[in-house]
Length: 169
View 1 (cartoon, rainbow, N blue to C red):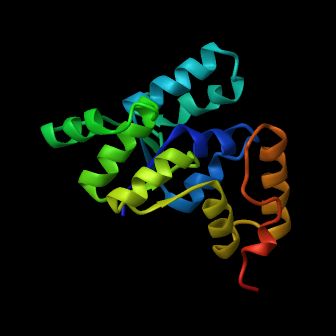
View 2 (view 1 turned 90 degrees about the vertical axis):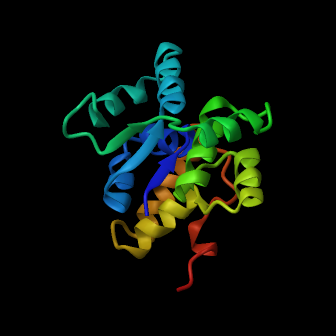
């Protein structure tokens, strides 16, 4: 199954220098052109952790594992235009693409997750990725908790501060 990510999940991993965890988990992730614009705006605003992402985005890097995609047909554009205006363009584009292409959607945004649930789109987020990293033995639970706490210190509003509460050990 293909995966499309909103800015939030990518930002949480990038801000602690761990975006490669997403590559290890999913091999490739798509972002919409609107999400790419949000990343560029973040760079302009001084979020320098986005700098390393440009080397990971295809087609800008031929080795990129983050694939750039766009809204591509009338149905995707129509849903994009109908989604609530409180959503950012990145969230709306990802929702529309995920819905019409039957892709998994990665986001931590509450309103985007509500819309995904309403539309029947499968979704996950930063916490789900950290748990998956533990389950796939990419890291230990202690390391994942360390990363989570680093993300929280950088501004991530996590629903939990200890992943052990969510693990079935």
